[in-house]
Image (tube, rainbow, N blue to C red):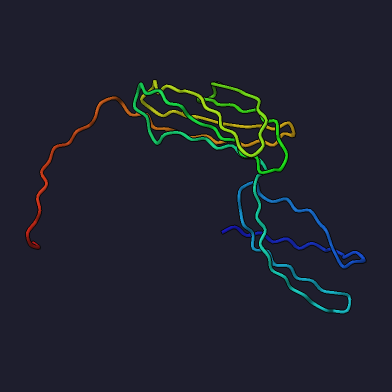
Length: 166
């Protein structure tokens, strides 16, 4: 659970309303919000509400859980635009620090992109999918995929059912 404390000194306008801006973390979070107020006549009031914060545009990378040396696989990047207007977004796939594919797309809602990669090492494949908007909103996700050597490690044994407790 995340917590934050903010104590502004706000003054209401003639309609009794106060406005302010607050910057929230970029991750998807629900904030339980409690607001307390006091008037010049020492009247008090309390309100509780929920605020959901999220990044206006996000990048998600989908990769397999593991690969076998020599495998070729298509990995997917998804751009999600939560705003109501279309955004121009630059996308990029990388393997380690080497660019595999770059694209510029317009996104209203969500769009998928993909690239093929080959597991040519027996170690780990570091894959990256990132986005950047014209207004410099950025997001990225990096995943490490274990790469196993070809062949199956086999173990032989015996399975027996015990009739009664020892």
